[in-house]
Length: 109
Image (cartoon, rainbow, N blue to C red):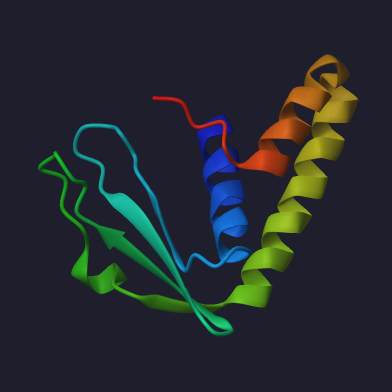
């Protein structure tokens, strides 16, 4: 779950900057990448070929449109709910998780 939290936080961070594209690499054999694009108030999600792998994208998942504001709303709701659960179940790691959400840059390979 940590990887996806950091990846989605990185998408939000990217979209809030001047960048309009972010690719979430799976780094697992046989799993394609997820490409997020922003154009104005709309976003697009594609499942694309993973570079350096035989993992292939999915034509039926090419540029699936979504509203950027809806994506932000869902992300921040997820963040709040997850942090609340962590605070209740494992408060000793809460700050570590908060940092993951804030930066979106914990991806280490």
